[in-house]
Image 1: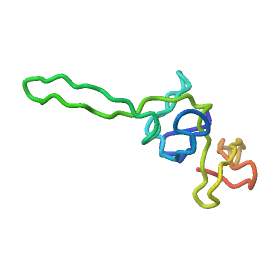
Image 2 (image 1 turned 90 degrees about the vertical axis):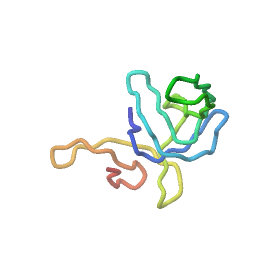
Image 3 (image 1 turned 30 degrees about the horizontal axis):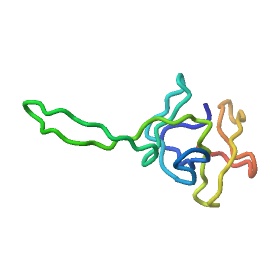
Image 4 (image 1 turned 120 degrees about the vertical axis):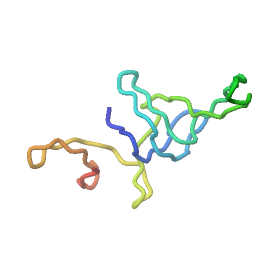
Length: 101
C-alpha cells in the first residue's frame, strides 16, 4: 500500500469526492485508510456510571483506491513510485522524481 499515516490525500471517488485530509490510520491488511473529516459516521454512546450519553461523530474507513496522494507545494495529485537510493527503498514522485519521505 503506497499511502501511509500522516500523508495528505485527496478523495477521488465517493460522497466526499474532492475533500483533502490527513491520513489518521492506515490498515494495509484490509486495504483501507481513515482520513480526517471524510466518511463521518454518527455513533450513539450509551450512558454509563462515569460518562453521559452523547452522539459522537467518528471518521469511518474508506478504500485506499478512492484516495490519491496530494502535494501541497504544487497543489495537485501525484502518483507514487519506488526507488532504491543509498540501499533504502524510498517513495518518489513519478512526475518530478523527488523523494516524498
